[in-house]
Image (cartoon, rainbow, N blue to C red):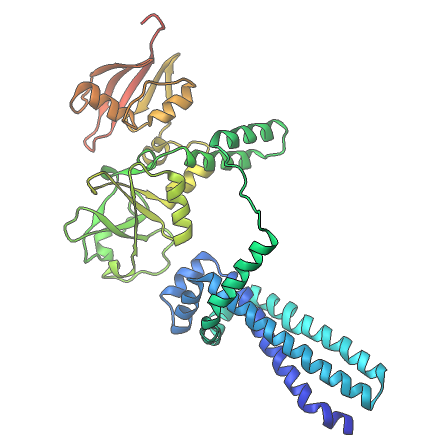
Amino acid sequence: MDIIVAIAPWLVAMLLLVACSGMFSASEAAFFYLKLEDRKRFRKGTTAERAAAALLADPDRLLSAVLFWNLMVNVAYFAVASIVGIRLQQMAGATYATVFSSLSLLVIIFFSEMLPKSLAVLRAPALAAFLAVPIAFAVRVIDPLRPLMRGVSTLSQRLIWPRFESEPYMQVSDLERAIEMSTQSSTVLEQEEMALRGIVSLSDSLAQELMRPRMRFKMFQPPVSLKDLDCEITPSGYLLIADQQGDDVVSAVNLINAWELPQDNLEGVAREVLVFPWCAKASEIFQQMLSTENEVAAVVNELGETIGIVTLRDLMQTIFSHEHGRSERLLQRKTFEELEPNVFLVSGMTSVRRLSKHFGMELPETRHATINGILQEELERIPEVEDEVDWGPFHFVVVEQHSEGHILVRLTMRKEED
């Protein structure tokens, strides 16, 4: 009995430290296991959910604080366990001390690491919201120490890896050859090959080649209500909010994934769109969308005017579909419809880069990205039905013209002597 009375306060302290360690371990798993949809919902949820979303806005700060406090609690736990072990050895013998030390180690492993993290993975949104306030307080407490921690980390990296060098720069062509070699050796499945080629294609495409032209989407000026949609989803899948002048896209709402929308003032739940010039790489747009969790980017010309939009859904379709052209995405038709040998029906929005890859040939240099631009430059006006243009190895004939500016062109391969 005297032994229990002597070590009881220390046992209580160890239980409290196990609970604290379990809280930090569970918070680490819960916060970083949240899905993208959960994070978006947290931004407009309760106070605790908004606090969790604010913590995730700076993941390095959150992770550093959680690991720091968890380490401090574990060190304190083992210090107390050592004190209890020494007292047991003095009062009851080495056997009891050894058994207690072993049980202490198992308790900290199971109740502060394995069990809390397992529960956090199963109930990540609920636990993240529940633990947001205490974790936010813990993060604020060590904020003054973060510069010191960052400096120690940088210094240790330079001492351990003083001559660390980056890997040689890899060209897109190197990736394409690697995909071809992997396909030949049957190490890459067909779906994986398609996705890899789609990702590589983004590195070689410009915003103006993948964007939805301005004539292919609709903007709404605030205030916007559900009645303005007429119970229909827009062609792009997003509600695009324009500025007060109605000239540029400033924000957007994902209508496909939205599970609850207010009846009025939809601009209040819209997210600000990214802005990129027409010459930006599609891969850069994709990377910014993933890092900022924005799903729409406005494409502007050299005057800053919105000429189109690129959506995350468009980029995903480019990566994971067999057909990567805008004709498939916007017009639901094949990019190259073969009418007869060496004669194809193509859309005017087909890119010059797509032409070059499809026919496997070098084309004349041009400042235009699409067939439409080439025809306008050669004709010096808007193309009309029956207009004919010879350009490089192709003979173009305009066969259809639609009111929204879309045209269909019959492409014929010219003979070498011509």
